[in-house]
Length: 552
Image 1 (cartoon, one colour):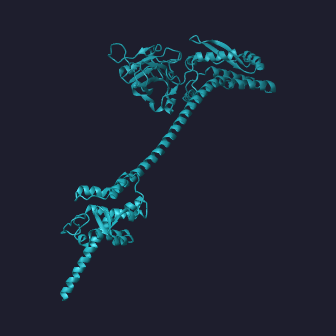
Image 2 (image 1 turned 90 degrees about the vertical axis):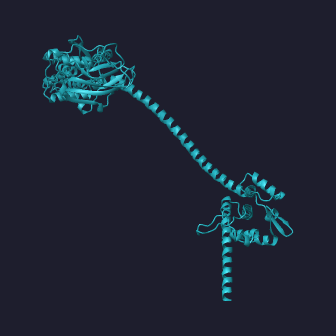
Image 3 (image 1 turned 60 degrees about the vertical axis):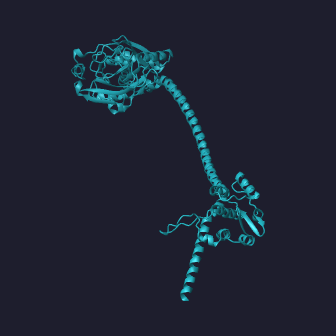
């Protein structure tokens, strides 16, 4: 804490011990007490390049560094600009940089401005998110204003560069002026005023119409207008950065509001010259229209210097940026089109999948119904095998019928005429499994209306009322009576004969498998109702006999 307080500076005064000599050059910041070669994550700072500014770096912790920037040339009170590089970083390394010796109390960093950053793999300048930038008064640095920003390095092999805003170097300015001078434009003139403290050329630019250039020079020489002295501060800033954009204008404006001394740049000096010429020559030129118009044109040309010349270079830069953005938009559109095609294909596949799922459900239902029908058709043979009754040699036609039904590939075979299917012999009809019924009763049964009556009459023909009244369909006692005694069940193979006869009857009327299955499922119910009717009639007969006996 004592070291940090000793090296901090203030905006109003600065001691001789706090003067920073020059920029850091490949300076490796090592933790306190560390001995040995630098490892990955030991940051290396460098500002020895054009427009660079970083005088000192202090290691506070593993994640925090204090940065001290050098003041302007010959003006130690102003410390704003910084521009430096960082290398030897570690992937996903998070750091906090504190620029601790800012001289300005008000800054656009309070209003959302953020430092610039770029790297070797991403050479385009970008702003750090404003949510990671803080500008505040720090008590650890003599209550000086500090700008802190957090950053995360994502690529180990990259060299990262941080700056106050977009750098505009002195070399770039000279190249730009050289290009303008090589064009030999009549309305543009470049002269040398002298050299700066750092031996850099100071240019005077004159922009006016060709016919007024001589008059302007003569007027300047005759009136001996004193050109404002160029501040060494801004000459140095021209070597570091000459174009802050809107942010620089707002910073200068805030200085004027605080009543601080303002120093004008080169283009401001030219505007001052033109303004004084206009003021001093306004009265003498007021009576003559043509010189006034010529002077006004030259004055407008001087004031609109940026509009007349600068946009040509800016146009080239904007054109390159626009072409790059067009190329990026083209790639994005191609990606969107590719994604759209993939989505369309996936939608088609989903639609086909839905259709397949519905078909699978239908096939599953049809398979289940087919199994039920096959079980009904093959039920007698399976039940006979389980019960093991006395061996009865089935008729050849019955075997043939069962084999055809077992090998069929459809749900229901083609309906066979009833009289052609069953065997007639000696006034008897063979229903299968050794069961014979009277032929006359069989014919009467075929004209019976309704499945219920048909099933009940067929059950009486097969079992008889004496057997039915003492049997049940399932052999399970009823739950309606607690003391009910279970009765013996009906023969399974005879029940299958009843179902088969009913199936033959229904198959003559419809081919809908759903309707056939529903009507066949009620066979047990019909037989159970018949057994209950027989028992009821027997009880009624017993009551009548008992009543008659009592009367006697």
